Image (cartoon, rainbow, N blue to C red; front, side, top):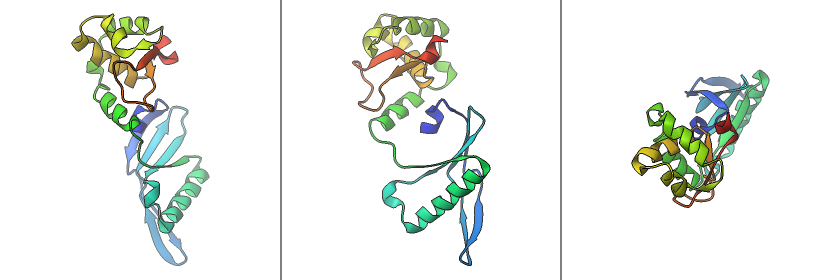
Length: 169
């Protein structure tokens, strides 16, 4: 979900390939969790494993994967669990990622209202009916046209929202 939310990621594949090698006469293999194509044309191989579950053998596998990635000019990222409330906020916003949540006239009004940072609900209510406005507001947050602190606290009425640099273009 975090890769899908990352604006630098333009394409994503799950379990994209299998690496196989011999290590001290022992056959080894590893299938990374994700491959992300980045906007700059480079790639990133991502493995997801909480740090508490990275034992010595897993650390060796990730080190080999990182070396292979470096050889072909890709990044290697080992990521753990997403912290709360970021995880909850991404889960909530991901429900609004689909273009069906976008209404051009409402989106234009939201961009105008949030040129000045203000609480989420107060800004939304300046536009009109919450049922019509909130899905568009969440969609713009998912698209990074509006921005808010998604790490410190769960999204709520008092969350300060502002127009992002991406929303200005």
